[in-house]
Image (cartoon, rainbow, N blue to C red; front, top):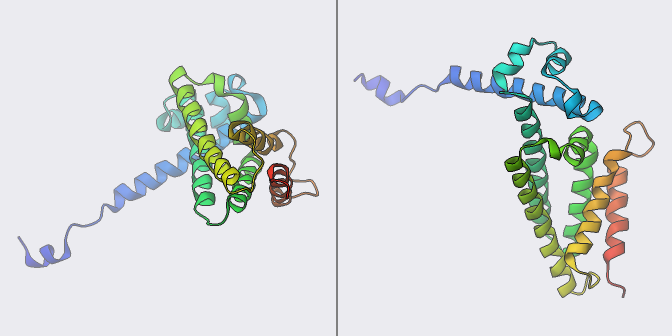
Length: 212
């Protein structure tokens, strides 16, 4: 073997990387276009033809990158769950008291709902369009997410920061309130997503704080 070639080592698979990046980019475009249409019309009213027309592509291109309409919907749900899980992980690792951490979670969750309003509409409305196995996965992810917040709330009770309310009920109330802006938030309003999230963090945390 050539000594110079040995020194250089294997060449990077540039073509493979470019192909993968192209695939990921087009898949993201498909999911974004599909999310806009499904959020506006509902899953059953949207066809693959509609999605391809929204992108300016042919239907065959959509089918090249996605098996069917169910895969498109499932990939949207996966994106949502991954985004929420990442946001929760970052909030929990930000440091501080249970009150500070819960405030960060409320703000992060609210922002995700408002900044990804199409996703939030689909997540809260179209879960019944998934397969039974997919619905079970979504339910497991949701329970895991809520359980982490419930554990934090229990820590806040133990430290005397939060009202001694059942963590399941307290967190259901908090997360439910954070989810609701998908039905009414408008980016054109005088309140930005940041304004709403900050107000939610302030008001909701005060609602669960233990009275001095």
